[in-house]
Length: 134
Image (cartoon, rainbow, N blue to C red; front, top):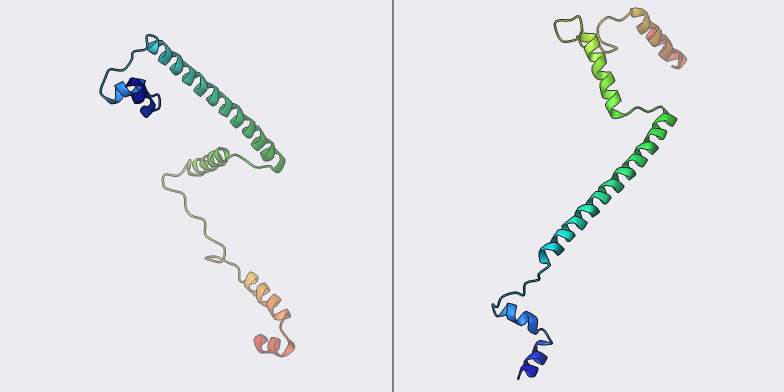
């Protein structure tokens, strides 16, 4: 009868006890094996982190050569320079810095306006030039 049962289960009689609620077989070296497995996982993780750190340092070297070649700055350097410029501008002031007046607003010379008008008039046909000069 055991043979027929074994054939029906496909040779999985060890698992049959577990399925029926029996006790699991205790491995005497289970704790040692688990500890070795955990150590192997930690070692793999450390190797992976070291590999990624090497790759990132290589990438940073390539980025730095590109920055040097094209005269670019790191984002942190740009932000630090802008912050220093703002602090330097505000150093003696008790209030916030005044906003710069954009070109075209406020105080402008009339000479500039005349020169621009003259430049535009040069490109107009003769009869239109006469109309605008009057």
